[in-house]
Image (cartoon, rainbow, N blue to C red):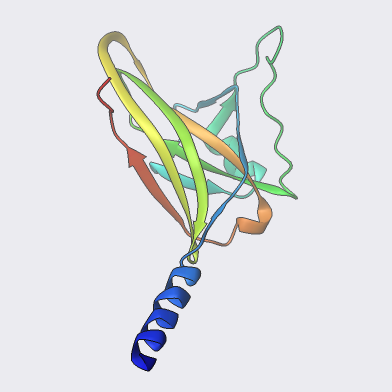
Length: 146
């Protein structure tokens, strides 16, 4: 019985150490990937100069037309940028969690029909700077049959 209790305590402590914490984020809107940017597929950006080297502002008139404001003293961004394609592609961040010593960013990627033009699929999330030093693991959720 004593061995069983020790085993149970070890299992419970292991489970407790594997807790996941949901990390709040917001999606940055009204940007585009610069055509002259040499950007990796998954990128963490911590300053405005680097951000402006990768992304441009895509402001437009009307409600919600301004690009998302990023406070670089308090926030950083994580972006997923895919290669140029002529296939309809929709990407969306699903969750950001702290798991162990890393951030895990799960996102959906849905591919559709061929198009007569090309796009550079991407999304940007804005995260509190307190999480900036943790490595990021990218978890792509591929097409889900409808």
